[in-house]
Amino acid sequence: MPWLVAALGKVKAGNPQASALIAAAGKIDSHFATPQLRLPSIRCAWRWKRGKLDQARAQLDQVLVKQKGRLPASSLNHFLSLRMQLAKI
Image (cartoon, rainbow, N blue to C red; front, top):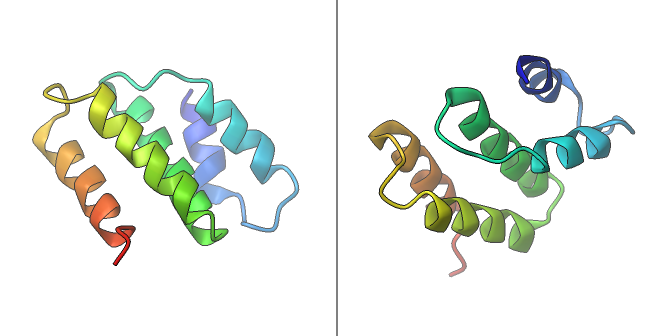
């Protein structure tokens, strides 16, 4: 899994392989280890950059609901910060 986190961090938005990497990240269950929590964050950022705001919001909401009460404080703050930035006015 570290290879996937590294690849997602380096691939450019216009790369044709980016969608495949995002899909692969979506297949990994996000539990508590740092790499697993990093993947939803990266996937959200990709959707945000591509203008898929509704998908990014839905993904963040899913993480926040599935991991409620189990996220480390720093991860919870990170996801809540992203969600606030994507909130509809």
